[in-house]
Amino acid sequence: MAELQTQKQEIFDYVHAMLGGGMVDVELDPVHYETGLSKALSKYRQRSDHSVEESYLFLPTIVDQNDYTLPSEVIEVRKIFRRSIGSRPGTGVAQGPLYTQSYTASAGDQTFQVNYSLINIEQIVVKVNSVTTTDYATDTSQRTITFNTGLNAGDVVGIELYSGGTNGGGTLFDPFNLAYTNAYLLSGTKMGGLATYDFFSQYQELVGRMFGAFIEFNWNNTTKKLTILQRPRAREELLLYCYNYRPDSELLNDYLAKQWIKDYTLASCKFMLGEARSKFATIAGPQGGSALNGDALKAEAQAEMEKLDAEVSTAIPGGTGYGFTIG
Image 1 (cartoon, helix red, strand yellow):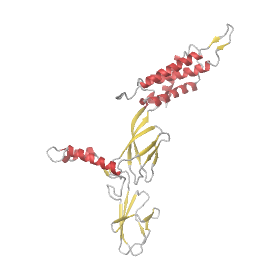
Image 2 (image 1 turned 60 degrees about the horizontal axis):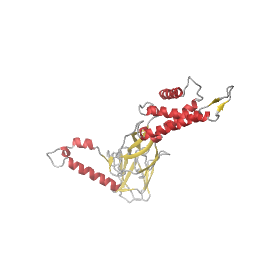
Image 3 (image 1 turned 90 degrees about the vertical axis):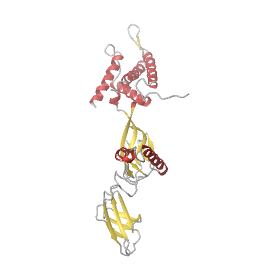
Image 4 (image 1 turned 180 degrees about the vertical axis):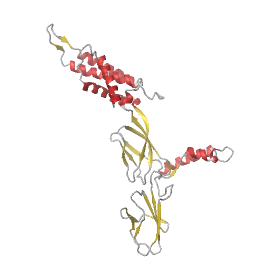
């Protein structure tokens, strides 16, 4: 914060000096300098792609929650990456269940006690005679599982508890580690090789597009709300590819943007000063009065702001550069 205030004061001193401060009276208050700088920063963020930066954010999902609010600095979400292969997290977790328990039911049995805390459990898998079922209700506080209908005598009930956690979401896949450790893919003297690895990667991408492995989303830049269009079935850590606003202190220290912001602040302050002076064309005095230069200041300020806007279009104060233009 102290560094930002020092940078702002440097710009305010520059504007005051350029308006003739020290030689003549400059009728600007601190609020006018702040307003001019705020306008310059807002205009630069609006017009220049040099005001943003690429970033990657980690987003842990919450079960059955589709809406997430991101920090105010995020202005665009380009893509969502996952660390897994497959669609939404299923009943399996790579590390296996945290706890398992089995019972042999008597005729009409419905409620079964679980000898494990269910508070931090993300996922419960219940099987009757090795067949997964969802025909039950869970009481976390009482640690019980109650079937909606009575079971038959001799039915085997299996209960599996999973953390679900960040390791859920399909099979974890690290291509660099796989390529390094799997001699089959890299060896040129055996079947396979890099071509096989490439075909396999294309196959995974195709299957993912067809069966929902990639996450679709909506991004609202005004409310900063990210809406995932698929309901999360278990907790999973996602990687967001975003664009963020660069901090004010970084822009004011950027050698390309700094002078542009100074000049635009000067033009804005000059316009405000001209607006005030133009209210009175002359000031009465013993020699017939003095003429004020309000209209001239406003005209100069307007011309300078138009010139600075044109400089942003040609990337003089920084930018990502020019692409190919056809036509």
